[in-house]
Image (cartoon, rainbow, N blue to C red):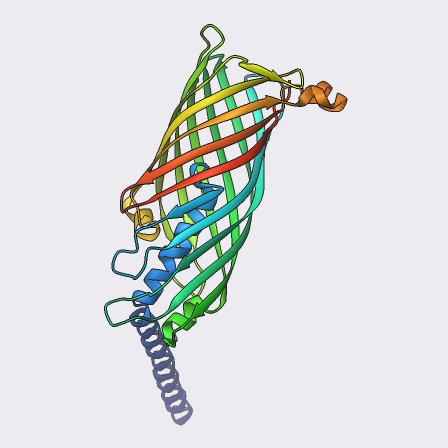
Length: 322
C-alpha cells in the first residue's frame, strides 16, 4: 500500500510539472505573438478600421476621401459605394414605430510607398465588400420629438494585395484575405418642427462601436457621436408633374481616443445638399402603399483633422409609408 501510494504521489508531481510546462509554453507563445504586433499590424488595424467605420457611418458613405499618411508613407486614398436604406413600420405620427435597416457596399483603400522609418516597404491595396443588417424602435412622444434606439452589424470581407515589397509582416497582414465586423448600438434624439412649409431639424446620435479584427488582433471598442442640423424646403418646382424639394444640412462626427487610434482622425465635418423628387405617384402600388417615396440626389463635402478631406455624391431612395 505504501509503495503504491508513493508511486501515485510521484505520478501526481509529474502531472503537475507537465501542466505547468504547457502553461508556460502557452504564455511564451502569447508573449511572442504580442511582441510581433508591430507597426505593420498597427497600420493594418488603422486602414481596415477606417474602411469599416466609413462603411458604417452615414456621412462618409459613397464618395472619395484622402487621409493623412503621417509617418507611414503616401497619404491613403479611400473610395466607397454604398446601397443602404431603412423601412419604418406603421403610420407617420404613430407613437411607436419599429424599423429595419440594411444594405451592402464596396470600399477600396490604396496607399503607396509605405515607410515606417526604415525605408520603402511597398504598396498596398485593400478591396472590401460588406453587408449590413439591423433594426430598432422609433418613439415619438409628440409631433416635434423623436427618440430612436437600435443596433446593427456590418460584416466586411477584404481582398488584400501587397505589391512592390517583400516584408514578411506586411505580407502577413496585407497580402491575404481577411474578415472584419463592426457592431453598433445606437440611440438618438431628433427635434423637428415646421414653419411656413420649411422643416428645420436637429439630431444627436450616440454610437457604441466594437470592431472585431482578423489575424487574432485585439478588438477595438469606443464611442462615436454624430451631430446634425438641417432644413427641408417646401416644394420648389415639379418634374414630370411631381414635386421636387431640397434639403440642406451640416453634420459632425466625434470619435473617442480608442476609435480615433484606428481611423486616423478624431473629428470630421460635413456640409451637403439634396434634391428630393417625390416619385411615389408614378407607380400605382407606390401611390397606395408608399406615396411619400422620394428619389434623392445628394452632394456633400467633408473635412476633418489630420488632413481628412473628401466628397460624396450619391443617389438614394427614401421610402416613407403613410
